[in-house]
Length: 211
Image 1 (cartoon, rainbow, N blue to C red):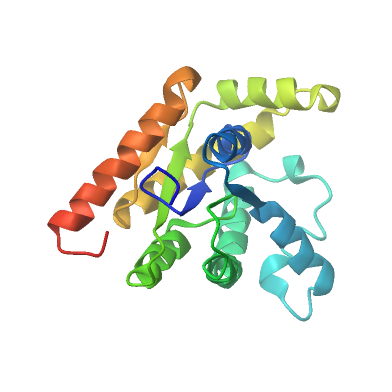
Image 2: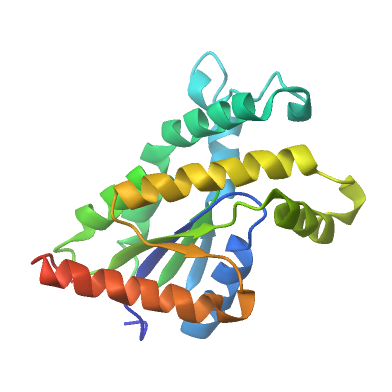
């Protein structure tokens, strides 16, 4: 349908590494609808309380995460992402009912949820694919934040958490057999993502899975 190896593409990755830019570019090139999973996360947070769903409210009482050790913030972020996995699958299931290509991107897309979505779509007639972008240099992410949010000052602590989270996502994606693509160089990212997805399709076909 899209001239690509996907009808629904999940793009995961840490904050500040270029997921939204990539999603927007792919959406334009393939006339696809973009779902920003961060919007779904905000909706879930708004309609629940910490008492009702504590796993998605870890940060409610932490107005300044930079006061916590980076590894503690990372643990909370991973716990939140895992708690949101059912919401990821709900979004994918909904998009499967719409005969239009879609790109779903967000920080809280876990490889476990993405792999489940890919496997559950087999036989549906729609091709769900997933890719995870990777950037583990906190200096580069700090620079990205400065460019994107110039009024927020140097966000080095946040960038360190993002770099650590990126490493965790890359490791988990590898465990689930999902492609991981380095963000840099940016100019070749679209082509490299396309190749990674195509290689994944060929591997699944060789293993006898539905393409």
